[in-house]
Length: 182
Image (cartoon, rainbow, N blue to C red):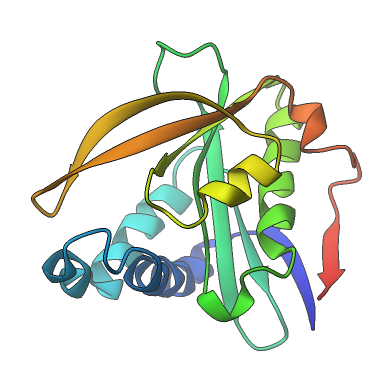
């Protein structure tokens, strides 16, 4: 399986929304209330992603093969000033069939490299504590640095933060090109 990681364009909004909704529905089944997952709308998410992609300087990458976009990641300036990290991985999602093949790692590295090229030095990510991908962030070298309560669909859940004090650990390649085979 061959894939590539590239900068997202406005034309990718519908594909990103599909990946976002389908990933939530498979990853968070049994974690987030099912009624909330069932209410997720690809059309509504696409509108949100169009707005994000038309922002002044969006940082978003997609993973694709010859036929479809099957993953994405985005990041930027860290949004919680109580943590000593300047960058943040806002979101990273892959369709289930593409998980555990090195693509998530490639997406995270692409965001880290972009942040590093913009003079960011470190990065944090927030993830639901019961998300099966917690082990992914640990395998990438993320260190648990905090937690906070969050409400989704009427359920009180816990988000945990993983941090990288140096982006160099995630983005050792400075070429910016990311392709791969699984």
